[in-house]
Amino acid sequence: MAMVPLSSPLFAWPKVYHGKSGIRVSCFSNSTSEPIEARKPKVFDNLFLSLFRNKMVQETGWDSEKPGYQGLIEVAHRLTVSQDNSKTRDASVRILKSLFPPLLLELYRMLIAPIHSGKFAALMVARVTALSCQWLMGPCTVNSVHLPNGSSLMSGVFVEKCKYLEESKCVGVCINTCKLPTQFKFGILPPQQEVDDALKEPCLEICPSSVRRNEMNHNMDAHKCPKA
Image (cartoon, rainbow, N blue to C red):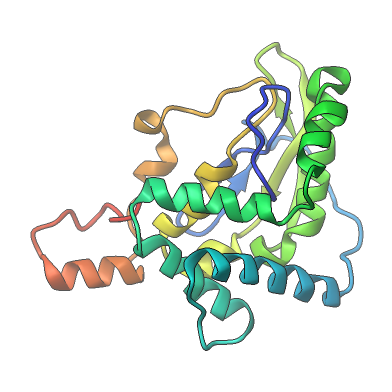
């Protein structure tokens, strides 16, 4: 999961690609990559988790009795199943924006995003994402992406095996609370939802939403996640 989407076309946000066993965050290519420096102490991971979970609880008005990451995942499920997909995505954007101090995002748009036609922002966000979000997604590396003009930029983030997808066991949770709310990238518009391959991913056999759906109605499409 990235940190917050910014709608400016000058802002480069890593694109999120989902799969059954993981997600790839990049802008098209993972041909080359560079390792991320040594991880921050685990205490920072715990602080990030606590902050993110608290913001999600404020949005949903509900908290899990489970501690740590497992509790966060239960709150994410609650956020997803309690409303339609559009409202879930809007809520996820509000949560992500609330993680930042007031005015910081506006200052970013005005002062950072325009530098070098947005390329500096793309490079910076990719590295910040890879460094600060491994507690949520698992091991990450910064990778090179191909832009429409034929150039390349180290502005992608490759997630080796997405912990968030693996623990949530639900494609719909990942799509609506991570992929769609954060899919901005330099010089390339996100794909239309009707042609986005990530939204066509089959539901995981262990998906809680799928299990409940199949118990209620055996005639529904068993391959499509009901929340994707």
